[in-house]
Image 1 (cartoon, rainbow, N blue to C red):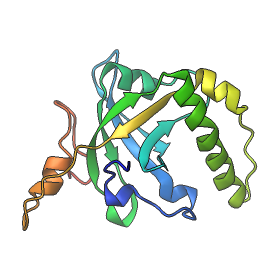
Image 2 (cartoon, rainbow, N blue to C red):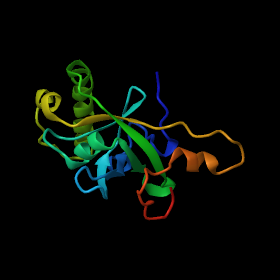
Image 3 (spheres, rainbow, N blue to C red):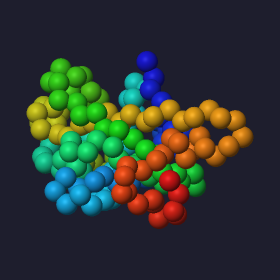
Image 4 (cartoon, one colour):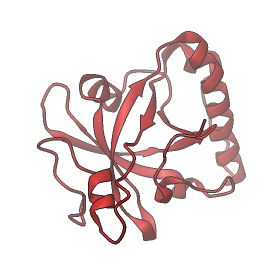
Amino acid sequence: MDEFIPEPLVVSGDAPIRDRLVDITTIGAWTGTPRRIEIMFHVLDGAAFLTGTPGRRSWHANLLHQPEFTVHAKGTDAHDFHAVAQPINDHNERARLLPRLVAEIVRLYEREGDVPSLPPAEEWIAGSPLVRVAFPRPSSRPGSDAAVQESSPLPSGMPPGPAGRV
């Protein structure tokens, strides 16, 4: 079943890598301060995911400590969206998802003329950060901007994006 994913974050299968990049703002696990990074956003089987090459990642540690965060869509339809990270630790689910995500990453880079040197899928399964991204459904009050506001509140103490929008 498809999960709710805000429209500005849904891209076509032939979209370039730059259209799949978002910023995320997490709360530092050790510092408690906002941390913003750029990362590739993945949609697979109607669900949203964040992952990275095998190894420890501060963004992942931050989301394990505080799963609420903000996804900043870029481009002409830039918006900030409140999200909740759901870590995927189950080996069978990781084994089902990560080879497909890695294959998609490789396909995207190869299509743009780059041949990435990535670890094999088995290493991703064993040691890559992987979270499902859940977005609260917006309010459906017609004729108001409340739907956007309510779909994207920032966790307590988190500043808005550069445009000041939340």
